[in-house]
Amino acid sequence: MLLSKTLFSFATRELLMKIKFLGTSAAWPLPRLGCQCNICSSKDPKDRRTRTQLLINDVLLLDAGIDTYQHLINSKVDPKKIKFVAVSHEHPDHTLGFQDLSRIYLPRKKGQIGSKSKIEVIIHQKTFSKIKNLFHFNEYKVLPVEIGQIVKVGGLDIQLLPVNHTNSSFGILVSEGGKKLFYAPDMKSLPEETFKKINRVDLIAFDGSELKIKSKSHQTILEGTKLGKELKAKQVYFIHIGHRTLPYKELEGFVKDKGGKQFNISYDGLEINL
Ligand SMILES: [Zn+2]
Ligand SMILES: [Zn+2]
Image (cartoon, rainbow, N blue to C red; front, top):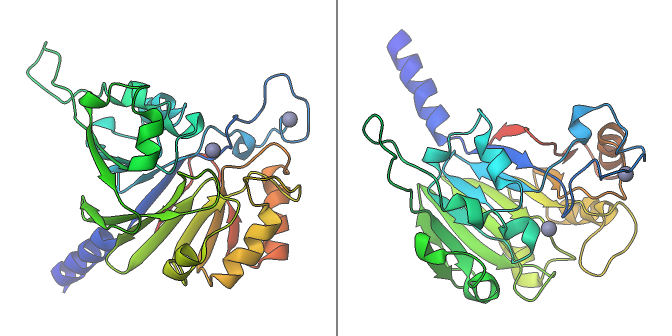
């Protein structure tokens, strides 16, 4: 009895998708340098945010922004396990980490420097063409993918789905077993084809750059609460939190009030098992 119970819990644990929110800020971190606003002077550790990046099942990074090195040198992450990076779009807060990711060392004999890990990069051709001359991509294995093409890596299915931001920006749909996560840090809105594919998804992590002020390339959190309901998402976490929002506690209250209990504000270090 005890044995079968142990086996059962082991089996169910294996099916969980492990999501680590390594960073949750918009293109600039919080607090902003020199700023004394309510967010920047907050004593709540949840108001300290680095550039948005998620880690799935310890093997897949979503985006590779400026803070990648700081995220991976942290004792809670083992960089040697990382085998794949999927990229949403070309902006520096999502790609500058490619400088550092090409130098992850694998274990070797005592006293010697290990060989380097060759990470696979899942990226759309249009996005890749915008950054390919900036980094040493010969040190990576680049997998250019088409819209909607399913890439199977590390037991996960990954698809890039268009979002309205730049003309080479995508949301990343990650599926494992029956569980689905949709990640879209930068988006003004969703084209119909993407909307249909992520209906009733288990977890959406999407753009929280603005609270109410309209911008031409980002949705507002207020719009996100409406969209999350239309999508019938089971859970929604705002990521890519901008400066013109609110401190964590107030922001969490705001989304629950406008959206409902399935709406949440992410923070650096948050872990969710889906
Ligand atoms: Zn961004
Ligand atoms: Zn501030």
